[in-house]
Amino acid sequence: MNYWLLKSEPNDYSINDLEREKTVIWDGVRNYQARNFLREMQPSDVAFFYHSNVKPPAIVGLARIIESQIADPTQFAPKSKYYDPKATADQPRWQTVRVEFLEKFKETLSLPQLKAMFSPEEFAVVKKGNRLSVMPVIPEVAQRILQTSSMMLK
DNA sequence: GCCAACGTTGGC
DNA sequence: GCCAACGTTGGC
Image (cartoon, rainbow, N blue to C red; front, side):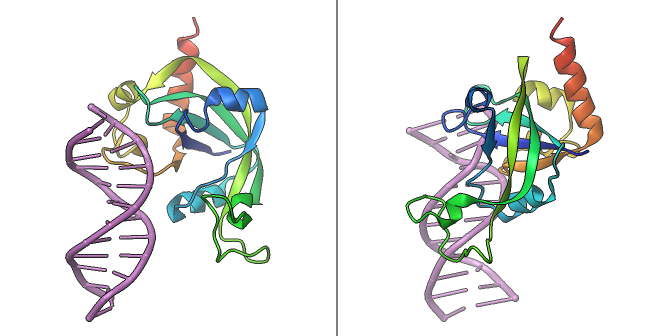
């Protein structure tokens, strides 16, 4: 089982949206490095849900990957801003996953807190200028985040 | 709102 | 294949 981090601007799609909808196809990723990570995801993997472009940016909860290797439907939709004319049903260019809501942290873990806990080498999200919206999380980092968030429940 | 740090595009 | 120009992300 692997851990991941998924960024989303809450104005666009927040953890509350996921909690309400239960599951969602993580569509609209149009960066090759991020897509390659999406292709590696397997059902039962766990993703940290990160809110970007807000004050403060923070990890706000957990989601689980429940279906992998989904062709991102927006690539076939001419009216979508994510439409890709080079994609065909036979040869989709953008694969993604379906995630389900797991939990919302009682206390979120802000970017300043994450910077205090982790080096840029062990956790890329704290690296200055990092723009990647999908990234792996090494087990040591995942465990420390989970421990910290469960401690804050008390 | 600013701007650093990218990723992409396209001319050559 | 190089790289300048441009566009986007996202922290601050």
